[in-house]
Each structure stands twice: as C-alpha cells, then as structure tokens.
Amino acid sequence: MITIITKQRIETDAVLTAPLTLDGESDDHYRSPNLVKRILGLLKNVRPGSDLTHFQLPPLFNIPKSQLQCYGESVYCTGTDLLRKCADAETPLDRLTSVVAWSISTTRPLIFGVAPYNPILGETHHVSRGNLNIVLEQVSHHPPVSALHATDDQKGIDIIWCQHPFPKFFGISVETEVHGKRQLKLRKFGETYTMNSPKLLIRFLPFPNVEWTGSVRIACKETGLEAELSYKHNVFCRRNHRSINGRIIDSSSSKTIYQINGHWDRTVTIMDIGTGKVRVIYDVKEAISGLSTPYVKDPKGVSDSESAMVWSEVSRGILTKDWEKAREAKRGIEQKQRELQKQRDSKGEKWAPKHFNVTYSTETGWDCSPIESKVPPAPIAVPI
Image (cartoon, rainbow, N blue to C red; front, top):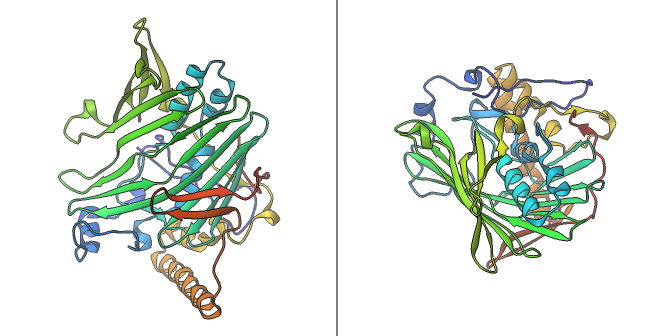
C-alpha cells in the first residue's frame, strides 16, 4: 500500500510531499468514493483508441505533485544508492547488472485512480541528493515532453532522459507508451548505457489496478553487453503479479550470461548460466521504502517555475480536501498558460527551453540534450 505525507522544514510557498513508496497502511485518503464509476464517467465521451494527451483531470483525481516531480523522485528518492553501485562496480558485467537493478528501481508503484499534474510549459524541478544534482524541465506541452539531466561529479555519473508519454483509451483500460531515450553515462569507464521505459497499463475492469508492462532493452555499445527485460501483468494470478524476467547477453555472440527473474515490487534475482548460482540484485524494500521527503534548503533560490511553486495552491487544496480552492487554482494556472501562448503567437515568438536543446525527428522522435555539462546544486534537497 502507498501513503503520502507532507513535510516542510523551512517556511516557503513551495509545497513538497513525500515520494510514492511501498510503505504506509492505506492510500484511501487519495481515493474518491465510486472511483471506477467516476473515472469511466469522465471518459464516457472518449472513443476507444483515442489519444488522451490533452485530457485534463479535475483535482479530485490528482495527487499533490507534478509529473516532473514523479520523474525526478525515481532518480533521487532511493533507500540504497543504486547509482553509486553502478559507478563503483569493477567489471563491465557487474556494472551492467547494477544498471539493470537501478533501471528496475525507477519503475515505481502508482495509485489507481489518481495521477500527478500535467506539467506546464517551462515548468522546472531542481533537486539535490548529496553530490547528485538533478534538473527537469517541461520542454513541450502539446505533445507533453519532459527532459531530465542529472550529474554526480564525485562518481562521474551523467543521466539524460527524454520522456514523451502517449496515453490511449481502450474502453476498459488506458495504455501509456513512454517514448524517448534514457542514458546513463559512467565517465570513469567511458561507458554509456541506453534504455527505454516499459508501458504503463491502467485497468478499470474486471479489477482496477495499475501495472508496468512491455519490454525494456538496456545496451552498452562500449562493452557489447545487453539486458533484455520483460514486464508482465496478470490480474488473476497473484504469483505472477508484477513479474519481471529477462536475460543479460553478450551481443557479439548472443550468448546468455545471466537469467533474470522476480517481481519489480518485491525482489529480482539473476542466475549465472555457467554455474547455476543465484543471487538477489534488487530488493524493493531496500530500494524504495522509508524514503525521505525533499525539503527547501534555500528558499531564495527556488525558482517561480519550480513545480512545488507552480502547483502550491492546488496542492494545498488537495491536502486539505478543499476541492473548490484546488479547482480555482488549477483553472487559474491553465488560463494563464493560454494567455501566455496567445501573447507569444501575437508577437510571433517561439518559446525556448532554459536547460535543454530540443529536436524532433520523425525517425528518432524527441531528443533533449542539456545546454550545460553539469547540473548545479539545487535549493531543494533530499536528506541522506
């Protein structure tokens, strides 16, 4: 079960809430009565197969945080520092295995029936955890595209993500393909690991649930090692619920080195094909349980475009269940964005991201490259 708690250390207009975890006794306070009926009521005029990119949820169905924050939390909110394990591993095979574990850790559990806010154009989220500095920016609104850049100079780690979710409605479910590329660079070894994201599947019937599904490929061109992961869902059999399996191979020979098995919300193991030895590479209780809430370290350094500032009034309304206040605040944000777009259009101006160079190709899709090589320390921090 999942619970979210607010925690603020320094007085500021920013509203920060605890990350989504496996901890807690109940998440019922984020669920409205007759949830499935209400959601299907919202979607009654939507045709099966329709793109839901422009679909706006009322605050009753929002959690008090932006999608940018959710993306960021999957990188900076961890119980064990899996990223540093990637940088500290001695052999290419151990490094790829560590990258696989880290990649799985970014697959976070979600609450059925509620979703984060859709980020506005130019919204940012800047957070530090120790020496790891992360910045995210919403670089496109229609279609929604989010970019992430993280650096840890002490360990020589660089992360670049480009996320373009594409949700479709299929009558009794919503399936979201997450387009875009993820890169993890280990500068010390001159290695770049590229990977994609699994799909997000939301089912309304026969049993409401949220799952990750589909295939993930993690490849390192420099070492020739690859990992193939398959996220599976099965609403009728708890034993196979949220299962994951796959293998680690040498791409030059297509030889399987390790078999991967487990559940992304429990533990994942690898078995050495040569020796039959099995060991745990990922334990969700260690990775994403007991996570700390980010706090404002430097109130003056928080930008007006920061997610926790942009949505602060909406979040306060949700947290106090003052739905009218939340609705008014959300309408105000949306109206301001429409006015800003009209102003740009009337002047013939084109909006440009602050932190990323963004390109689009029909062949390769969206690409987001950081303008700066390093991410500076942030005014928002995560306790270690």
